[in-house]
Length: 395
Image (cartoon, rainbow, N blue to C red; front, side, top):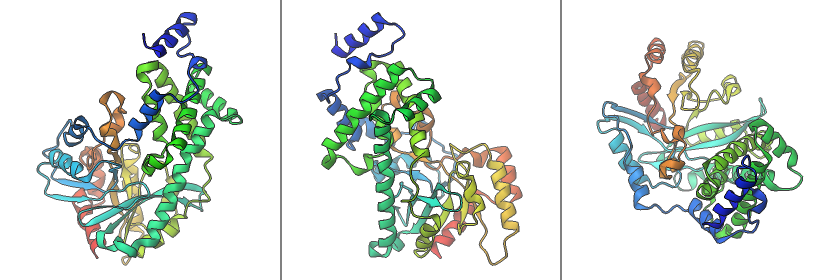
């Protein structure tokens, strides 16, 4: 019998209510731990993973118009993403496709894009902005300042992972762990189990810093690392640990200092100097920014995480447009799929179903009858948004 399976069985024999006996888990980093770490940071794709990327489970042959300006390639090669899109929308005749990696400018055909974390000083909270460009406008040294701003933000946002790991295992951070456990109704044995794995992960990152891709240093690394232990400790224990760690992550995010982010106005000003289009995503998460009267081209009224107020937001955009002077460009209505391509790479058993279902350019709200009624009343459509936004980016 596998030694870890024996530990688990012994714990259950002694106390059937204990999911995992964390006291008996080795505290030192084992070769199995190191192997798990190498798997979760690897950007190499197996033939099976390539097939999962290029072959979507469903296609949409009747969708002829594709607007995709909020999605994340992550480490998945663009040529594989193109193959997936060809199969997703075999009859598309009009499109605007721009990647928006977090704090990293990436290119697709004639355009480039990025999703930037920044700080709204008026409301004292972090917000995000989608920036889109003509490709040549961010080529070479032209976008040196903006790229430096994004690089700084990328590194700072990555530091949140270390705060999460420290909150999960260091002495002196017990109050956060107790609060997260209460929020998630988590037993002490699961909290300790998560603590041990978090400590191992931190040591593995530190020991393998030179060979660890910087894009891997994000909160989801802990989630992916913990998932690697399902064969050893079982789905129930790992699932409970993930629920607890999600609660702990939210506490860390709430207390994450905002002073090192650039202000939203600074990001917008620099982006506009490069001819950028600017869109506010995740409106339900960032309500205050809708009141800030920032210099933006549009508002995302729907994405897989923000669906409840779509019709209200369309009407709100329409009201703002009615009050704008004729010389001011109208606010555009956007919808974002917020697809993260790394989710497609995972074994289907480890995928989050909601995230795995997202597809680049798939925004069912455009076809929803109630939403379509609101769109008609304010005189807009997906095709019109593509035409108008392209004209602004190309102008």
